[in-house]
Length: 198
Image 1 (cartoon, rainbow, N blue to C red):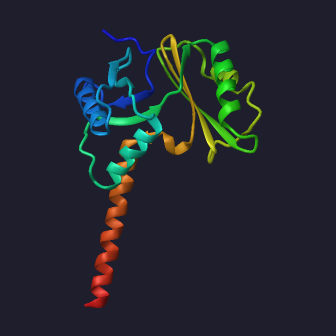
Image 2 (cartoon, rainbow, N blue to C red):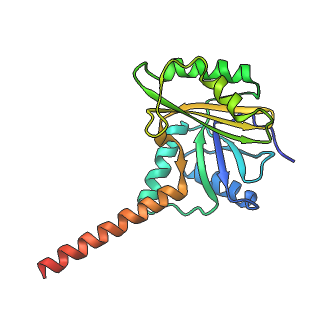
């Protein structure tokens, strides 16, 4: 049975049918980063966990990126981690109000933004949610290269909202691919220099 998801600050996508293993991995990872007692819960959606870390969520994700870049990331079932700032009821009024509050605090007048919306077990139409979120945002939209992302996740009767930098969304598979590509390029450059100096 799914646990309550009100008190958390990380929204985590994991391999489906491997939630139990993913919970162990995430707990081990957060403990490795210095959180002695993280709280991790299943949700009503397969492949989705919520977690409460006592660490700063953004710093936590930066440390994970460092682990990946150093080829020191040994976890298999974690796919994506997003920091969460607010949990509100799934209603257009709450979404509109919360987005305005966060945007006023976190997006400068000259900055551009994009709304990223994901929906699971929610009946609200996608267009209605985006319209409600954007209604009171007096900033320019940039879908390709925004300064900030208004991240909205609908999960049943709960809505999870953050205003974050694009790099604050941690796609572990993407980071692993980029780290491997960089390592491969470095190896090619090393071999090229070695060949020239031979």
